[in-house]
Length: 490
Ligand SMILES: Cc1ncc(C[n+]2csc(CCOP(=O)(O)OP(=O)(O)O)c2C)c(N)n1
Ligand SMILES: [Mg+2]
Image (tube, rainbow, N blue to C red; front, side, top):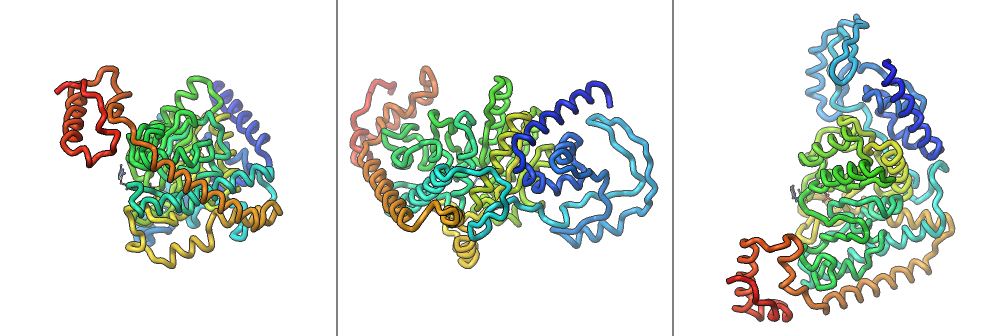
C-alpha cells in the first residue's frame, strides 16, 4: 500500500470507528443487515466497513453458479465452467485498482442463495425482538404514533372528498405510514427532502398542517404553491421539502446535486430522497446513484419497496433481489429494513444519517412494505391483485396497529386515548376540508408570474388567450376569475 493510500485508509477507518462508537450497540443490526455483503467481493473501502462493523472476513472469490430467480439459465451456465483450480498470485494494477488473476472461469451469480435479511425490531404483535436499539422517550413515541394516525385519517377523509367530487385527485400512503413518519422523525429539519409523491407524512411530521394539505388539494389562494399543481403535489420552503414532481425519480438527481452542495458548504446536514421501487427502473435513478457514490455525497436514498408500480408487481420490474442489492453495484452501502416497523425504520435512518453526514457518502435504504391502497384515486387495484393478498397485509402487517401494540406493551397507550385521538382528528380534517372549500381560488393574474422577470411573448399570448376564453364563458370558472387585469397584450 502506498503512503497516501495508507493515510487515507487509516483516516477512513478512524472515521468509521467514530460512527461505530457513537452508534454502539445498534450498529450490530446494521452489520447483520450488511452480512450478505461481507461474504462477497465488495469494493475494498466498503469491505473495510463491513469488517469494522462486524469483524468478519471478506471472501476473495465466488465459486459455483448460484440459482435463484432463473434456475434453468443458471444450470446451463454451470456446465460451461472450466474446472481448473490452479490459482495464480499475479496481480495487475488496472485503472480502478488491483485485480488478482484466477485460472478457474468464474461466472458470478445473478443473486445470492438467500435473499438479504430484513432488519426489524418489533414482531407482528408489536413486541421488541431485541434490546439493541436506540430508545425513544414515551413523549417522542406518542408523537410518532399521533402523526401516523393523523396521516391515515387525512388519507381516508381526503379520499372520500375526492369521491364526492370536491377535489380532482388524491393518493394515499396507506400501509406506508411508518415509512413516512418514522423516517422523518430520524432526520433534522436542515436535511432537504426530495420526495416522490407517497411521502406526505414527512411533511406532516415537519409541521405542515392539515389545513395546509387541504388548501393545496383544493388549489385555493391559501395554498403555498398558489394552486399551480395537481392535488398532492405539496412543497414547502419553510419545511425544506421540495415540491413533489410526478415524473418518476426525477427528484433523485436533484437530491444528489443538493447533497453535493451541502458537502461543498461543509454543512452537517444530508439530503434525503424518497422513491418507490418502480423509480429504480428509471435512468434517472441509476445515473443519480452513480454520481452520488463517485462524488461522495451526504445523501440518503430511501426506497419504499411496496411491491407494486401501479399494476406492475416487483417480479415483473426486476430480476435481482429487490433494491438493496443495487447499492453494491454502485459502491453504495445499503440497508434493508422492515417498512412496517416504525421503530426499525427510525433506527435505520438514524444510522444512515450518521454515515451520510460523518463519512460524507450516500446510503441506500430499502424499506420492504406493501402498497395497501389503490395507486391513486384513478386506480382500482382489485383488477390486478387479489383481495386476499391486500387483506393479508392489512390484517397482519399494518404498521399503525403494530406501533400501537408496542405503545400498549410499554403501557404508554390505552383505548380511551385512542378513541379521543381518532375522534379529534376526524373533526380537524373535516374542518380543514370545509374551510379550504370556501376559500377562493388564487387570482388568475398570478398564474404566469414567479418564473420570469419579464414574461416571454409566448406566455403573454397564452395569458391573453386564457383571459379571452374566461370572458366568453365566465360561468364555467370560479367567481373571482372574472376580475382580472386586462393589461396584457392582445
Ligand atoms: C418517468 C415516468 N414514467 C412513468 C410514469 C407513470 N407512473 C406514475 S406512478 C408510476 C409507478 C411508480 O411506482 P413506484 O415508483 O413503485 O411508486 P409507488 O406508486 O409504488 O409508490 C408510474 C409508472 C411517470 N409518472 N413518470
Ligand atoms: Mg411501488
